[in-house]
Image (cartoon, rainbow, N blue to C red; front, top):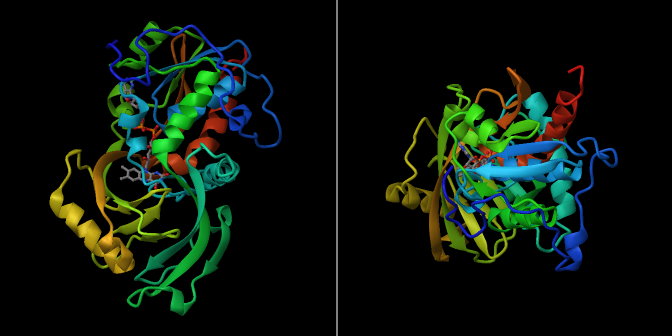
Length: 363
Ligand SMILES: Cc1cc2nc3c(=O)[nH]c(=O)nc-3n(C[C@H](O)[C@H](O)[C@H](O)COP(=O)(O)OP(=O)(O)OC[C@H]3O[C@@H](n4cnc5c(N)ncnc54)[C@H](O)[C@@H]3O)c2cc1C
């Protein structure tokens, strides 16, 4: 295990502490689907590997279900791929579609609730998806609000058409700290620790269950060679007054998206299969700015605030299941591709169900 190096994590296991409410919203709990989950994990000790959006939302749901939760991660939340995400609700490069539809719909419902909470980092935005090649309606259209075909006057002059819908935009710079505060309220503070194998993680952590939310790290940790990086680069700019997101994955200049958050806007993007560099490519930055300005001219006058690069955890299918290795039970939740934020709440609730079943004596 490595020493802690970031202020939002601790090196040693903290004594559970419950912090008093610091604002009215701090007593708020995300409602569960079909009512309360109850205390189905009461007394169970669960160790979560990973402090990205998957690990933190699972940890929170597990704690709400009564588990004593410990979170161990090689990188703290601000240094995860989750901190790079744009992040608009949008099921991109995540499979299988029939599972993604339910998980992403459930997440959208929770994000709708969170948009009412001032410090959550979630805001509901109207959006426009444009396409240059005509296509059928998207398979996920029933999961969003207000889906309709764009009128001819609403689309870019060169585009073949578009869709209008409303979706949550999640500012991960605010949302990840929000999740950390919720977890701290329940006595869990992530600890920095890097593992070579799941067995070594289980040995170091103890507990009844190990939950693997290590994102692309699962490629070595499991190991799972079916995980492949999908490199993405984004540009953060000042907000020139935009309140609508735009997505155009087949823009003639390359993939383009414009995601207004609160004070800033994330411009994208790229999706390079197998690329592993997390260094900024200046030519890519220039190309992103160019094609986003083609979609929305106001972008050209905005100030560039920063560049971020992340490696999405691409996999042919999300892995959300229990695995037995001798006496060790591991629950996996990784491989969310370009939709880890979009899926986080739906998957976290499914994970709690898998954990409860895994701990039943006859399982
Ligand atoms: C440019 C870009 C734009 C994106 N836009 C969107 C978007 O608009 N909407 C959306 O929904 N998604 C988006 N995504 C995808 C999203 O970011 C990912 O799907 C999501 O972050 C995956 O979250 P995770 O928690 O599973 O993994 P991560 O965020 O990668 O977290 C993994 C955690 O596991 C830890 N870990 C890994 N290996 C080990 C180990 N061996 N030992 C201990 N700990 C370990 C890491 O340190 C980290 O804490 C985007 C991604 C990129 C790169």
